Length: 220
Image 1 (spheres, rainbow, N blue to C red):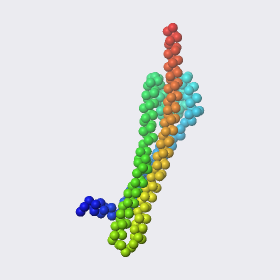
Image 2: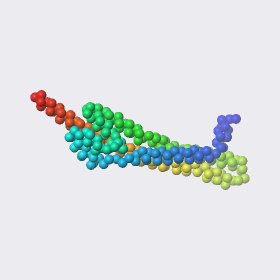
Image 3: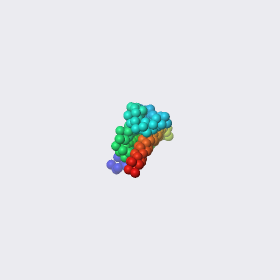
Image 4: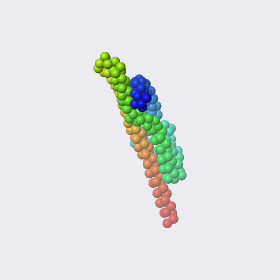
């Protein structure tokens, strides 16, 4: 048997299995959307109010008060800031490195499974199109065995085959929308993380300069 005949025999199975695959992928997509929405549902602190109060506490050297102001580590911004405050006593460089490491960890945690959503959004239409092609092949094969049925046999088969393309788009569109929304949420959160980290580092820089100036004046 030639290779073309082997492929044709496999294609005549039809597109039903493609539809079941798309249904499973849609369940996976919805599961990831819900899981990511729950993970990113933590309420972010209001940086405008928090920054001014945090600056005053850091200026006074009240690190315990700053930690109490930030509260429990329920958001990435607070978790990174707490890491920076804990390392601030070791110096600006140590605090910066610790917060950079914590930021990378938070980013990986927030972007978990988002690649799957992006992959589903990009490839589910092609999977649906593949099912449609298989359905069209089967429709023409049925016509060759039942030529008396005429165009009605082909049209019915093609209409059924196009369902796979429609289902592929139904799976892909929500996945793409969710991926873009969640990526936007990640970018905004990382922006707030950077703002908080720079705030802490700027204050520690001012304290280091003040300390250096005091030492110089004493030496003079």
